[in-house]
Length: 575
Image (tube, rainbow, N blue to C red; front, side):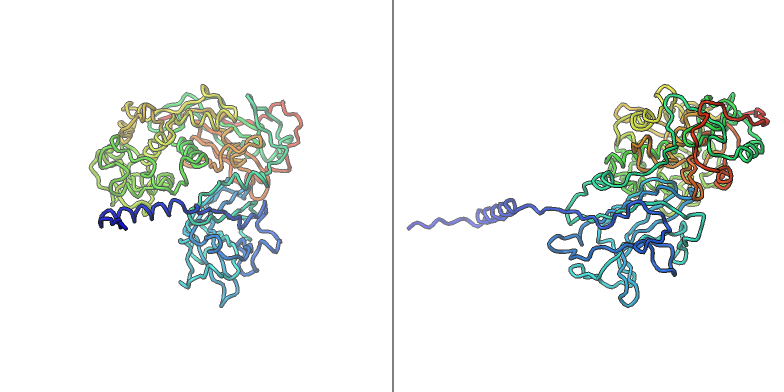
């Protein structure tokens, strides 16, 4: 009998082949997902026993979670937890922190497992978090036995911005409550991919917008104050108290006119100046850049705004070597850092930077102590310090964001908004513009009193042959059309029962140009929107709007002109 013998090296190869074959032939692990919580649409606070905790801590949403084994037969304990909240209405747009947690009640006091993250909530809209279960931790460092856990509850805590443990927001605080919300939690097993929120959200509770809210088509309709559900005398008194000044520009620019549009429920209730006048709206364009980012998240091009920019675009071969998003502090920059001015980018104005006459730090005239200052705004436009550790107003950071988004979309950012937003809300492409960054850079006197303002706008100006729009600003639009965007803000991203964007906020950082929208105003259904171009005008405050409201829009006299209000309208030199 002949015995075949393998040489040692061939035996090793055969052994590896057998192991690989056995792995290949194994049945694939099926990933599963489980819906833990769906509140439906609820008002907070509510007397529903299932929603509120005891009277000592009236700042939580508490809901029981089904008791089950988290490790077998499906391993959820090493998977991911996905949380979703839709803010349908809140009294105003003040920032709050909304923290999702797990809680184990009743065992030697309450134990808390906290997710490694929090929503930063301002405007109505949809907010989501995706976190690995391993990020969950117990406050007192004890270990949770996931194969036989105690009963758990889903807990959401409302906190003041930057607040500590003692800074939870009580339900009695009328600045923040009542709030209408919907919250969902889904857990995904180890190795699984989430099917997406459409799986859950579209099947159940769509956001409810009052039937009396109108969505304008090609032209706005105008209505009398009384038909708009307003107290005519109070509204007229407020308008008469204003002293609008038109032709207000920045840095020596001199607009020839200006305009203001105020609407309720999709109807114009008052205009001032020229509501069709268009002018570049300075830093207001940052809002449009944020819309493009949110759309990228909604469409799955970016997983979350907390992702690192370098995972989607590095800029290698396009940016200067020290600016590439894999180098130095740039490698730690997240999309959210750029949005919230925490990326460590110190430059916001080339003229200020060259003359040491400004900084980016609001209210200061000094170069930030942490900046590696060379006096060259182009060279210095990169992350100089640990992202997330300092806040510094930076148009340079928004320019980098617009470059990254152009690469990610591989499309003109104006075209992105035209396709997904503007065409849906009645703004045709030819009626608005968004200047390219290179236009501002090349025009040395773009702001006449600030020569080389655009010196920080660095290459690339085109990515894959596509021009990069001005992420820091420079959207050219009329007050009428800005008010359309404001109505989308007021509805939280809905237009004619179609969700166009999951989250959208207005802009409050530019004195003479503004778009804003309010759905609920201190607990009342307002649905006001506001557009302003090149005008100094007292923007309406929530307490003022509440004083106007007497009821919903009645629908009477829709085609009549608003009641006239006599005001002084002096022109001002834009410089």
